[in-house]
Image 1 (cartoon, one colour):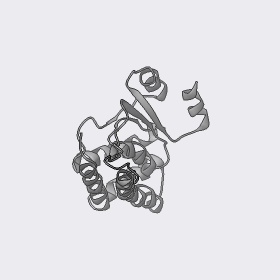
Image 2 (tube, helix red, strand yellow):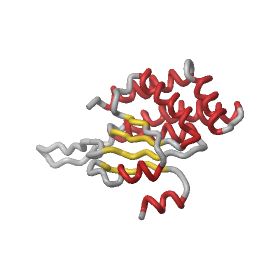
Image 3 (cartoon, one colour):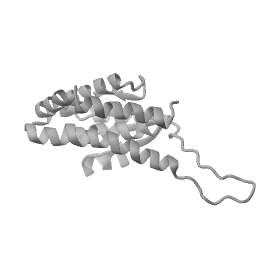
Image 4 (cartoon, one colour):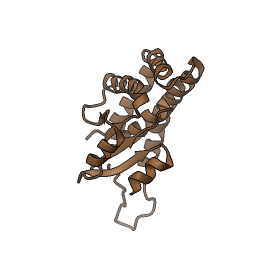
Length: 180
């Protein structure tokens, strides 16, 4: 229910917090959960995620600014961008903190509600990301993290009448199970 500008302010605040107060915590959680060294964690969980948050805002603003330039005399064509009617299921991989955060954050930036299921080894850094979202001002209920096994989540989510889409990065085998 917030405007794109309000949503961008929240996501840019996330980037700012990640650049400062959250940088060491997100890197440490990535090192512990995904067995990355400090250099790998800095590139993945801090630098790339800061870029995702900032660039996604720029890209979203460019999309919203894209309006029809041809209208018959006396009329004005206008595109209205709306979120999906339902929720997005974000199922994220074990090996990249930034991709995990981006898979749930990008659709949220566009106004969608997300149910996020991180991989088991990524839960600690996912918790840090959820703390970051909260501190930046993301309203409760926009991104909802669950920590159950994938088949239990799928049994409930794929049968839910409000399920609107899947945002997934992972193995072909897992995707094929969803497809079935």
